[in-house]
Length: 377
Image (cartoon, rainbow, N blue to C red; front, side, top):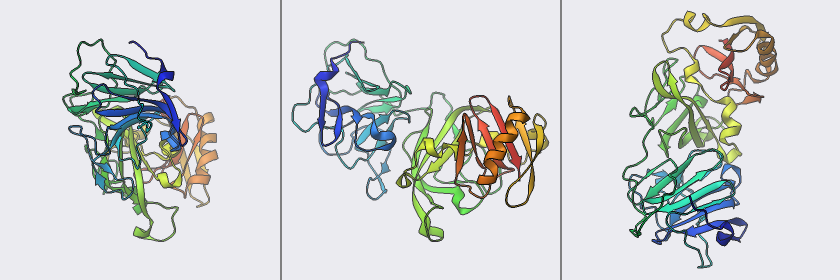
C-alpha cells in the first residue's frame, strides 16, 4: 500500500491540528486530527464531511442526535476515534475541512498514515481506521461499512468515490441481540436495536428514545435519555442525554449477543472507559426463570461480607480466581459501593459494581481471565 508524505497534508488553525485531504472527485473533505480541540475520546480521530455544509449523501446512513437539540437528524460526518467503534455524527462545525482553499488531493490507491490513523481513497470510496484498535469505516454515496478496507491498485478513476453497495452489517448472517433477560419486567434485552433498555429495577436503570449509530460490529453505539442520579430534583427533572455502548460481542450459551452494555452522561465528563466499571453483563447472569443451582454449581463459597446496611452476604468466586484473591477484592469495593448503583470501581483488570437488577447484587468481573467474584441479593 503506497504511503504519501504526510507532511504535505499537515495543517493547523484555531487549535485544530491534523492532516487534511480531499478526494479526487471533490465530493469529500477528510482529515486525520491529531488534536481536534474536542477533548475526551474524540480529541484524536479521523473522519470525513461533504464538500459543502449539507448532510452526508450516503445511502443507508442512520439518523443521529442533533448537536444542539439531540433530536434525530441526518448526519454530516463519519468518523472513528482511537478507541471506539466508527460512527456517524452531527457535528457543530466543519472539523474535517481545511479553510485555506489549498486542501491537497489524496490520490486513488494511496494511503495517508499519521497520528495513529490510516486513511485511503479508492474509486470505491473512502476508508479510515484507528491503527491501535483496528476499528474503522469505508463509505461512498452508495453505502457504508464499519470496517476498514485496504487500498488496492487502481486504474482510471470513476470520479464518484462511490461503491460499498450496502449499509453496514453484522459479521455474522445472524444479527446480534442485546444480552438476555435475567429478571422480571425487563425491556430491550434479547432484542436487535431496542428503543428502550430497562433492567427491571429503579428509574435509574432505564435509558429510552434510543437512536443507534451502529450495530453488528465489535461495539454498538446509541444515544438516548436517562435519569442522571447526580442531578438535583426528582423524576423527569433529572433526565439527561446519555450515550449507550453495547460491547463484548460473542456467543453466550448459543446466542450471538452483546454480552455487556453501559450508558453514561458525556455532559458530566464521562466516557465509555470511565463508565465501564458499572457496566451491566447479562451473559454473566442466570437467564430469567432458571434455577439458582445452575449458577452456583461451579462457584466456590468464600465467606461473608457486610456493608453499612448490616446485611451479611456470601461471596462466591467463579472461574480462575481463588478466595484468597476474591475476598479482598470485594472487601475493598462492596462496602463503598453497595448504595451507589451508578458508581463502579476498577482494580487492575477487575471491574466491580452493583448489579441494578436480577439475582446478583454485586459483581467483580475480569473479562480477560473469565473470572468473577459476586454476591446474591
